[in-house]
Image (cartoon, rainbow, N blue to C red; front, side):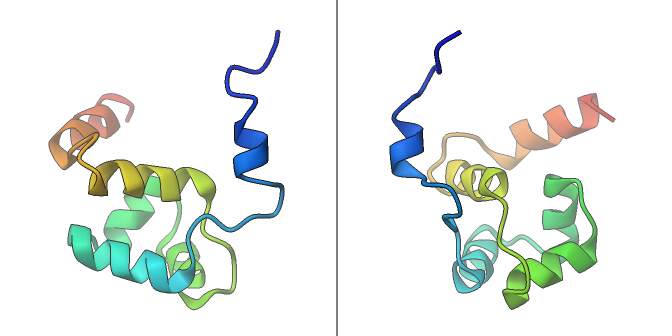
Length: 88
């Protein structure tokens, strides 16, 4: 089947970093999210989050999009918490 959003390939070329470590730290502060919070949201370890914050590994695009949606009010923490709880 054809891609639903073929223009995304042009917007986010392979290897692009959607969120820098400094932007991740800033976004976490804006949203009042801790390292353990991000680990839960990304379903990863605290160590992985610390590596993203230190720039050792790139911030996953899916996490960047999730944080953008929270920041922009597209979703809220209550909605997100309900979805996470439902999937555990």
